[in-house]
Image (cartoon, rainbow over all chains, first blue to last red; front, side, top):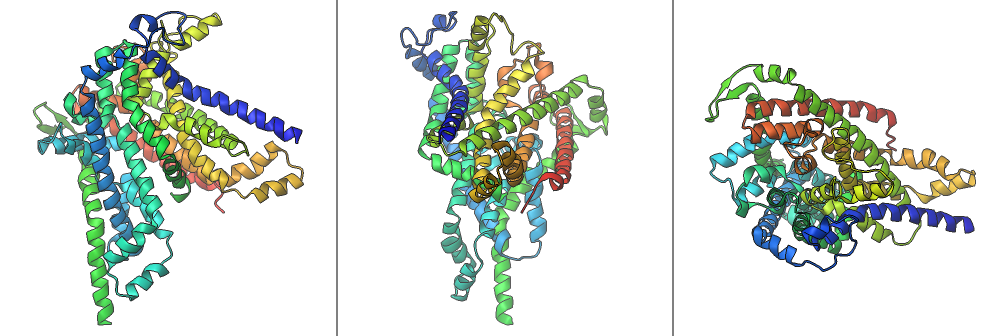
Length: 274
Length: 297
């Protein structure tokens, strides 16, 4: 008993040390965001700002179109989730459950796409959007993520794990393919759909290079590239940069804390599913 | 018989309608761009959108470009160190969190925070922590008598400084996947081993490691592929004029620089082909190695 108590202590000590390493950059971000420029460069650094400079937040908010950044980010995430979850689900169902001529070849296209580094697509994707005259639009942000090879692959695994008897019974009862898919199979893969939604959101949220290339006018940027231009503007005014970072990251942190269970389950499923 | 054929025909129609949007999308957005990039790497653009065939000229230039060799080396160093350190630390955290302890949920949340943060924001706060004059790290080091480390501008430290940020931000993600793998190992295996008098280290190597090897393999593969494409932190933390740039820039950064900052997309396309070849070679090696050390039961 004494031994296992000691062990728990050691485990906690290690985990707390790690947790502090994870937290310090965030805490330092918050602390710095409330300091004056003068105080931020003081040595030794102060742990608690002498007077909280909430004005840093107002200054940053007014200097860049953050409201547009938010709208663009959430618009991009919303449309990408809508497109990739719907199209991946239909394609994944057909690949998993219907035998049709050319199936293996078409699924090969999905697998090949998954293995290719995404940067290879960027130049021609840019050309396509430019030719359509759609640079600096929501369309440009959404387009590369409207379908998903990864999502098709992931959801196919989910469909494959559902017993065949269920839909065979439904087909004998006279349900059409679409009804089987929509009414029976889709509700059964709910956790897969949520997982794909979360992956899509995370990927869109963290992608920096595509918005950097496609949407160069400030009003059309998502938060990722908006922050990059904030750095261009304030290069070493760290209190302002930290305030801007805080403004940018809190919505996703909040979503994560609220939907934590789904985030964790979605991601932990991929290790064994893939 | 007629009925079955009719059913089949209907099924085919549904199947093509259902895979249609995704396949069409992948062809337009991925397959065509892949071929186009390949084609571009054999052309030279004159800046007016008109390109002419130049054969292997871009590849000859690439083979003689020291920046490409250095960027390949940087990418390899970044990948090897961040995969080794990142996967090791993720596994340690996952093993610790798999113990019967309180507060698992809180730890998991904290370790996961960097995963849901925008890389640009992460890069900015680390750039601040690394700041040579007023950064927190140099202040802490100065307490121990070490002063003035130029983390991000000294060619000797800059790449490792970026690696640290990469590792820090990936631990939570890999830990979650590994923890799920650990939780699937039946407790009875450990109980049996304990009856045989096995200690914690023996248990780790003879039960945990072999049982978790498929998950570990998955994590290693995805981390390698991700690390080979490192760009964000370099772009955000190293300025183009920084003397350490040449010792930190990755292949993807070099691709971005030539394609979109200098407008030489043909050369950019050739550079990204190098990344493709490296990725394919590593994927092939992994497939071979997988048979050797992964135990699927």
